Length: 234
Image (cartoon, rainbow, N blue to C red; front, side, top):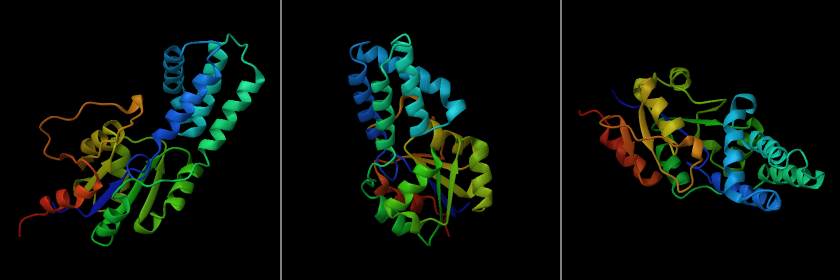
């Protein structure tokens, strides 16, 4: 069946994102260096993030609250108010950082715009994702935007039925196997993995084996070639 709809992840697929989390995590480790070792702090923070996803969701706000919680834990409740203030300031800075699009993002979207229905499918803070999309200048290429709380097979099935011709005639493109590719495959769509150098630990997953609907590309410039190969023979 011909693909008519393409879903795109946003963070670390179209623009840089995880690098700002890593930089803030380093700053957080410096703030707490008198209380615990960096590796121990990183493990405690990751555990807090995993624990808090169901409460705060994905994105900067949940990350900031997890840092505050971790700081309280590793100091036995004795974390200075100054450090709490610095953590909150770091979170605010993350919500205002400039948007830097990834190589080939704009030209690929421009090449596909009009030939396919393009849908941005991203999770995270609503206001932050809307801000980044507007600042990226890529919003004009999308026929629809979906900012969701999580990405499951049901998410892609609903979106590709609402904004396309169903999941069987759609492809999802993203850097996360766990969130972008595997659930899209379970929904019946094609999944196109575009690896990024930095991927959040909670997004790691194994590549699917022997699935003809799974595709791996080095960067977005290769996406049109994949789509050309998937065109039905005349």
